[in-house]
Figure 1 (cartoon, rainbow, N blue to C red):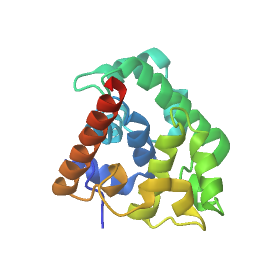
Figure 2 (figure 1 turned 180 degrees about the horizontal axis):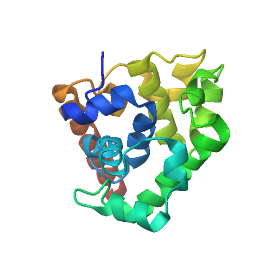
Figure 3 (figure 1 turned 135 degrees about the vertical axis):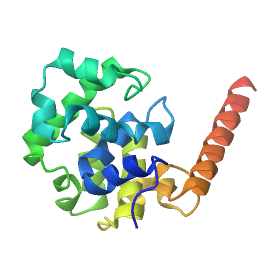
Figure 4 (figure 1 turned 180 degrees about the vertical axis):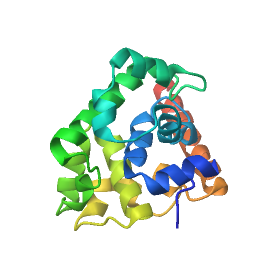
Amino acid sequence: MGFHIANEPAADQVLDEHPFAVVVGMMLDQQYGMEHAFRGGYKVLSRFGTLDPAAIAAADPDEFKAMASTPPAIHRFPGSMAARLQELAALVEDRYDGDVTRLWTEASTGKELLRRVQELPGFGKQKAQIFVALLAKQLGVRPEGWESAAGDYALDGFRSVADVVDADSLLKVREFKQAKKAEAKATQEA
């Protein structure tokens, strides 16, 4: 199938070929356009030369931050996200011997998968649920109970990045998110 989240062929190809780039994109998907967040792995690979978690974790923090901040930066907050990316890489290296796919291939239930994802830096419950849905919908990773673990993000529709498969679905997800924000704002003002 291939990813179409970054909405840029070269960046989507990096997502297809480097599972760590998918996790990086999800981590960066915070106060930043989702397609831009999922271009982060491509930017790191292009500038740093590798997406190997061990190399990223071991990089000089100041040099890694400078690389992440080079326009176009990996995020609107490149310094803090560069540090978080190095923290993520260190966790993947230490806990999964550098093989990020073990995060999901060794989870026997959806509940365990959600717990494992929530252990990643920057992954609260909602982001973890979205990532479980993304793994299920786009990579076929569906341990028993994944739907329950992913909550509403497991449903059909255009709720999150898990549902982005082309430019049209990207727009529909963006519209859904904007409607939800407007609804929340109206509720808050009432």
